[in-house]
Length: 125
Image: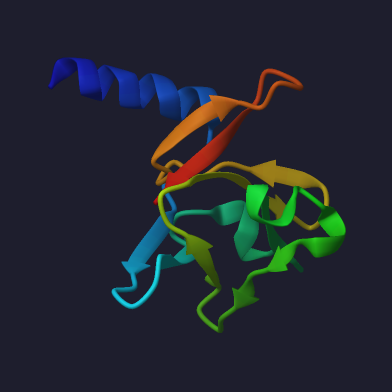
């Protein structure tokens, strides 16, 4: 247990980001999972006053022009749901106001992005 707690605090300090939420709903009828990515006021202060929060990753080839806009709700939270093929892993990040990249500690894992010292987060289905 000590190792896990130590790892978590090291991880949190390195990324300076709050825990967010990823919900997975696997469909029985086809190899697809409905994945909901969420940011809330309680978990992500930077996003609360943002004009726009977008989701980029392997599922849209990291193309900003194909970024998925998260819908903003009255309570300040943002959400987007994607249908993703199962038996795959997808790297992703949030883009806040087209200037700040944000990670998600609720991700299943993380990998080096190969460009700089930052990591991309992964949702495994």
